[in-house]
Length: 200
Image 1: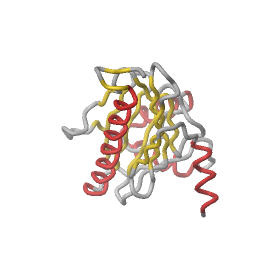
Image 2: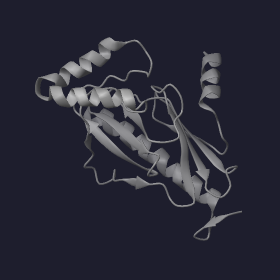
Image 3: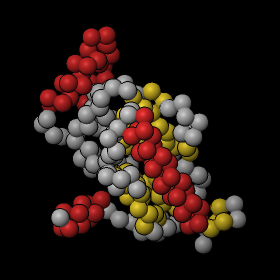
Image 4: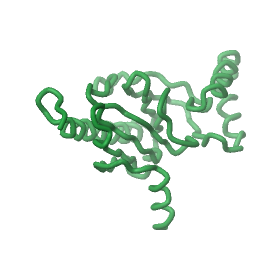
């Protein structure tokens, strides 16, 4: 088995998965406690993630949906002072499928516990699926949103060993309670959605 700093890669990956569990849960509670909108920003190209927040309401629109009224509400909210900036953001959103829809402006969290978190060497986030996306992404940025009333989004992250892709952890975010289920195997989001639909 491959090792990182004297520890097995799998053990290190499990430790990282548990840290991820704690950070998601912390942000989930912060959003509710402070009545703010939070999001975790995952940069797959840089293999790091960080947290931002906004005091303004945010509407998540699933990519490809024809619910343009919500998008228009988001744009109108920013149009008074930032009409030109809003138009630029709208254009970027069309060119970059993983970009979030226009909405509230987010600022980086000043919470010392929510710094930039690099993925440790020897492992990587290989792909991410969040409920508002059409499909999982393997590059660029992904966004996981948290809402003041105690909700987040269904999401699946995969943490993979750099040396052996058979060593993989699936991190599954429960949208109702912010708890992350950790499975030591690759679990596809489509299979999980089928499971959830079948159990209802």
